[in-house]
Length: 177
Image (tube, rainbow, N blue to C red; front, side):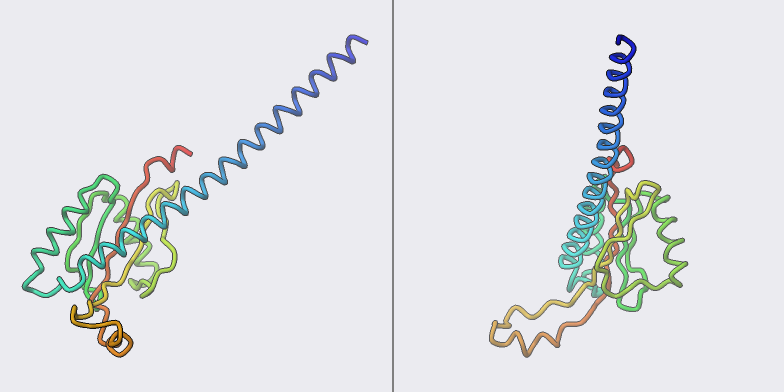
């Protein structure tokens, strides 16, 4: 009878341990996926905000102001790199804080034959732990301030793509999960 009790206790502890370990692995994967999605959405929001702020400043007369804006924003530790290109894809300004992330992005871009989709719906993730999220947002010309809501439907065609902002943000906590 004593050996049977020992076996029951041993198997019970083993089953509970295996269940807890399996649950921990599954929950870690779920949390990691949620963090990665959140990181991608944050990269998207930042790139769209920066594109909106840069809109209308790509003319020669305001190039210095737009470069100052990009440099001031891009100095934050989370920024791996920021690139602003014109509508043809020629670089206007580039700020590199993480050369490894930039090199990995360049390898990816060359594999795409240098072209990126005009509209990105999801972020591109780089790095072994997908810790760098890259998003490309179009810089769309602003409507004149005199446009009213009644004129908006007629004047929306006056907008054009001036260029693109490519923002790469890194999340140093993702490799730890």
